Image (cartoon, rainbow, N blue to C red; front, side, top):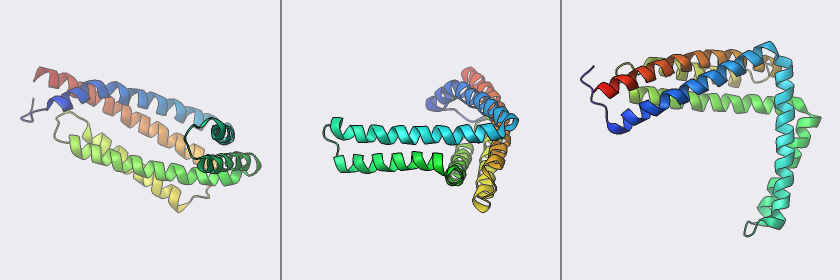
Length: 191
């Protein structure tokens, strides 16, 4: 064991975090496989699900005008109208939704990258924590975001393939990280 003394919150976090990281890995790998095996279908399903969700959310926001009890009806009206409009656009102009989703994924990936790099810096002093894998994951996420921001019109099906590759790589990194975090948690119990 190293000279680094683990605080109780860190010890507790490592004990409970490994299985969450493992679950993220399994979900990412499963999604990556689906996206690579059926990219066209995955793209269509994502857009249709978004359209259904936005449309229903808009309808329920409008219903909230009558059941909101204290919420400003004007905001609910705007929220409902925007939700219904987004849902209809998803069905009538799926390519516009695809481009918007590319940009959302790019932004999300950039934010995940920043948070993962920050997390890696925080745990780098913990022996066996796998912080280097988390750092690599963060850097990879930011590079993926830059790719999407630079070429947002590369095509939604192509994006699905890239997301599939990204999900598989991230799943593999998270799987390795989960193993390291679990190992570190066991070592911290010995301290």
